[in-house]
Amino acid sequence: MRSQKKVVLVFLPSESGVDGARSLYGEHELNPLFNWFNRSIRTMIKRSQFAIPPLSLMILSSLEVPGVEQSICDMRFEEFPFHQHWDLVGISVQTGMAKQAFALADKLRAAGIAVVLGGAHVTLFADSCRPHADILVLGEADDLWKELLADLAAGTLKPLYQSSSFPDLGISRPVSKQSLIKNRYFTTNLIQTGRGCQYSCDFCNVHLLNGRRLRRRAIEDVVSEVERFQQHDRRIFFFVDDSINADPLYARELFRQLTPLKIRWFGQATTTLGQQHELLETFARSGCQALLVGIESIETKSRSAHKKNQNRAGELAGAIKTIRAAGISLYGSFIYGLDGDTLDTPAAILDFINETRLDVPGINILRPTPGTQVFERLRQEGRLLFDPLDVTAYRYSFGQEMLYKPKNIPLDAFIESYSTLTRQVFSIKNAITRGFAAPRAKSAVMLFNLFYTHLYSLSRHDLRCQLETGKREKTILPYAK
Ligand code: SF4
Image (cartoon, rainbow, N blue to C red; front, side, top):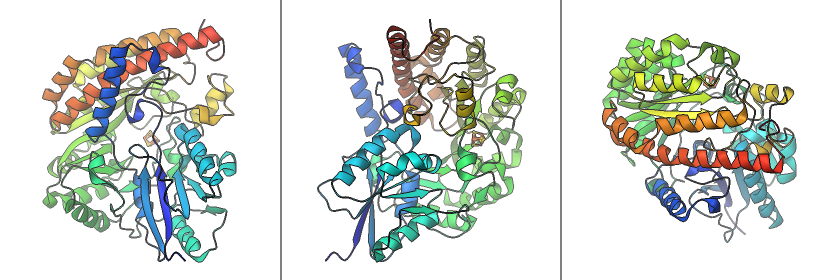
């Protein structure tokens, strides 16, 4: 008889450029030279450890329950180990990759292996997941997973694990990296400091999944995790928190205590940081190299159309210049195709990037994620391009697919203007210039811009194919005539 129950937690790759350069609309139609370049870039992305570890699986695999042994299978790097014995397989399901998750779950269950599904998609669309699982976990799983593992050891598993409140992150739950293979990743020093967001942008599901109340981990827990992680991996740290500077007192104290550890770190923040001078200085002093900021739109009407009201459009450029002047590089993420956008928007985005000297621009198309307010609104307005009842059709991509009709711009004109914008923003010359101009993390900035130069060319190819196929087959894209 086996003494330990064996559990594996699975993370799936996406089918698009999100995990490397991959066409959604027929790579075979590209020319052979481009295909070869495409494959080389994909390999390079893997070799240069572009990927970061799956944080939620890191957290769950760190929970210790007597009689249970856990591991992680990251299918971006390996096949599922069917040849081994598993008592339970846990699959993290995101809506953009739900089809692949269900296919794997069905295959495992057909082979007699019990499957538990959890993650954002399962929490929002439990009914459609039930036929593919033995067990569902709904909501943040920090406490539920421990209960489930104890039930597995005792032979008393239940079909559903669901909690009525969000876990208290103030309770100490040390995270371990022992299930990760270090050299696969850009860094294994991934640390979550908090969850939740007080804002309500209608294209985002963070406030739906993690709540509007900010929940923070205890500062001493984060500091001791940094000390522990540092012993095994001296690479960069990545602090995961959608709004770390929304609680400036917490953030200032945390990074003040981290300063003596002399780490280098990346993180996320809002552009309000440009007005929080003391906190900005603390960030820079504690080793902050680069931050990801969600700019989304520089136009007031587009921001208010999507409830992005937390910082004013007119203050964005000044905030970005102030943060860069403090010696921190910025990845600024835009969304084109918002309801206030017009064909003049791309020129305004381009001017903004040039004026602020943004280090890595990310030019996204609005993605109506099923379950968000914007998805529901577009459904009611008849603007979704795939069947709203099949939410798995709304897959992730790297700006490679239109999922909806923009409000003020015909679809073909939108695709043309988006393609022109990405061609203007990303070139090898711009990548090199941005790399040298970046306040910090110069080589990472250059590398990101080089990858994006290629990935956005893939986006242009796929969008063109989608438009042509839609017109030819008169299936989706009904108004793109
Ligand atoms: S986009 Fe950012 S600020 Fe807006 S709700 Fe999501 S996490 Fe919060």
